[in-house]
Length: 237
Image (cartoon, rainbow, N blue to C red; front, side, top):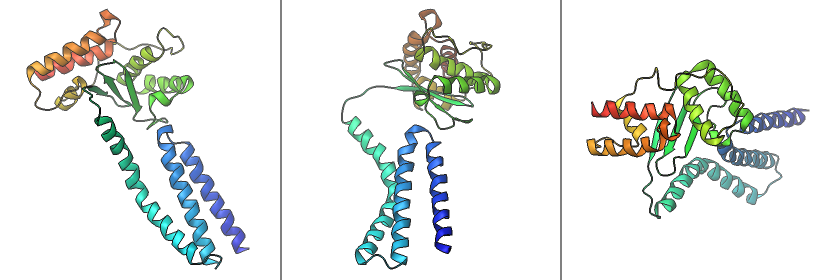
């Protein structure tokens, strides 16, 4: 009877952890599945060893599993570093601008003009916009509309690029040129894709390059253009 209760408890825990992994953003699920698989293998090995059904090979395998479980977080952190080192072997002068609101963090590639975003709050927290389908984006759009006007305008910037001319994201639009969020110096530098110590010439050049891509008169985006102008004004005093 005790073994049956233990088995049911183990299955319940595995089910809960599996549902938790499935609810995570897609780019984080693989790591969770790996950790869950190692955890299941470790528990199974320990149970077999405790019941005397494993020999010394089983004990050695258990030790390997423990070492792998402890080293997994380090490996997960190292993989992006190794990937960036490989990417760094090829010449790349690309720069990114970062605009952050209460609900969104958006990055703009200076060369291509592509936008990539990550949700910072709400039911989709941790999700990348690129991993969200149309229905999920509509749900997040409604959430932004009710919670934060800056986030709504920033999300619209992304939607205009991903779904040009598409209908379906309905609702009252905000004043695209305005913003209730005041920029700090660090934020202004991030918006222009610059680092501390940038000269006035660097600031002017970065602003010129970005505004050429995003100015509303050229079919760009009002909100991002306004943020870029505000960043330049703040940094130049």
